[in-house]
Length: 526
Image 1 (spheres, rainbow, N blue to C red):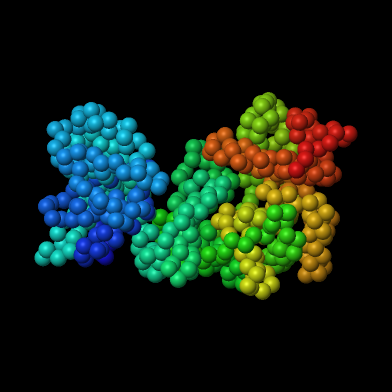
Image 2 (tube, rainbow, N blue to C red):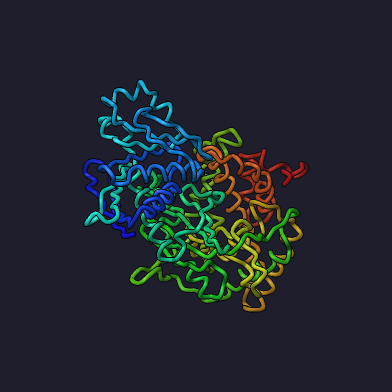
């Protein structure tokens, strides 16, 4: 199979074209089956080509793959115009418009209703006179040179243009890495709205993960012409993951080995570290959390570079976790948690006081030492690898948003885990473990200064997460994150009891009394 991709002019309609050479009948069927893996409800595929070019072979293989019935009879719908099949995910509509007089007849066929949540395959699409959805994939089949094999010209139009680029990049990636025939299984999505994963499984049982992380689209400007993601120092391309992965592995830590990559489209084929968590049905497994704590000690006692290589000629400068980033994160509480969970609105003066108090509290943090702050260092992103030794037993994933920030941040992220309750006595025990090992490595390490930084950063993180989980519910339609709010509220209450946050505690008590109870009241339970 020979592949080539070209971008069409973007002056009118966004398009991308991919030319695939198919050596024989079996190659045509195989390509149709692989393409079926990329289709989803609502997709439209148009199919054209001369007599004997392979349309019937391609259509039959595609429908069989979509229905998961390899022996299914797939007759030509020339006389019936449409044939509808039941698929495991959605209906499949196979249509032939050769006998259509014009696009107006689609209304009589009830085309929109039939195809709304279906994958639709249309032969002779030109008979519809442009009445079909412009966002579609067109496939034209022709004879190869000298009549040998077939050539498929795929053209993605509109929203399908970028998808076609990713499909082509994926096929090239897995073929170059020896994973082209692996079974693909979608994995549960995380809090990201643009990143997803698939597990690839070979016939031998070997597994790998496909990370799908296209370049993050620029959001609306929220401050001085910059979008939230830029201000908050969130990774905008997959380059940050690749750089941090190489940096962590260079330290001897268990970040995934990268088998192959397509940086432009944001596709990575990476090592599968497994599924064994650092928690069980009872909560944190103390021994595993202790090892994860020791891993942070190693990071925080190592001189680390601030610029890391991505690939030849490309470097990634780890951004600083500056005041602007820290403040826009705590503002998520005011923007999402207060109106949508508490059900009130902050006045302009209350919001200004909130930001002024946080600016003051964060001042001493910003003046302190910095390290690699992985930022999402908590149970969902830690894999236990019992077959390895020492710190390598802690597998690391999801570190693309790493910044140069305070050491206390990741310690708080781990020991005040937003997804699982860390008992206060275990938290205190592991803080003690961290402090002792830091002190052993560096006699100048000041425990009280760290304790203040821990309280401040834990409160900043809890404040941010309350806003993020409310946003995930309201904006991204992911309500299951709301079940974690009581736990995070409890953490925040605990943090605000530290003297370093006395002024902020008064603010929370004044404006969010439901969140921060009076001294003689029982705090929110986890």
